[in-house]
Length: 456
Ligand code: SF4
Image (tube, protein in one colour):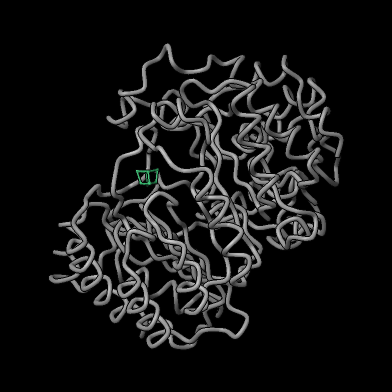
């Protein structure tokens, strides 16, 4: 891929609108409370998959990062985590018997901050999961880490429990940026921790970076990118800061005049993509980078990349079970979500023996459109004949009302639509979710709502 191809400032400006990130189709906005726990159980029975990806949500954080839009609970009281883990253990004990004929291929802990937990709490939770579920020998086990509040020996501890992938929240290394977002952390410590984790045996380390933060400049962000290269991390997730102060109160602390404008933000994104590609990383999807020998890069090059609630993944044939407050599951032809608020989550576990609050059963149309959107999001390519055969449709007839929406992209040279394929050009890579909106049957309902983040 020619990196220069993907930056056409005029086109990016033209299509820099809001749109879903399509970690699912339909998106979570379509989940509703009529989807019952019995529907969830039926979805398990009907699912053709017998491999499982487990997601465990740990909602606690020590301090509030002002840019954050995650579902989290800020506290310094570790006993809150003890109470949470008791309820989580109950949820695990209630859910695991539904999955006895599944093998867990992937386990991921996210948050919040899973590294908020003490070593003892982590050990107990891993032991419980291993007792209740059947784990595959080639299990991929990953955890998100906040490098501000950990000790060096966390790496040994996690590795001894079977974790083989780490993801560190780095975001930006400049002190002025860090002070503005209330996330001051030591560059030296992060570098030492990554080096140490590799010595311990971790073979895959990811860092998260964000562009568009207050006081970010090309000069200071270049230093952050250089460090990522120096640390020799395997994967980098590069996210655009979505400033939605009306939805996230903490973001009101980030004054408008501190934020880069759209052109400056565009330049930061361009700098990041060019730098990381020059450093030898492959650009994956619309926001990830991986070394060419990383399985994410290999999956992209052989067309087997998949997308789920955790973003781009190689685990396409797995059902996903979310455990913990606010977590999302994708079982067979259904999505469902747990209650988002902590006290209500506790109460639901006690009174109804599950924490599910809403979900959706996919219609045949959802399944077809979901596959089209996933193929385009992952591969920038669609084989119409494959979709037609799989779903017993004629692609062009089925999407007769949607295909005209592609005209503007065709006229701008962003994609080609033949009778056999839809091929998206590299220069539309960053706009892929806007293109996918053409196939989203629910989009008309949301078109005027500020519910989604912008492309850049
Ligand atoms: S960014 Fe991460 S560590 Fe910071 S408040 Fe949000 S969830 Fe917690």
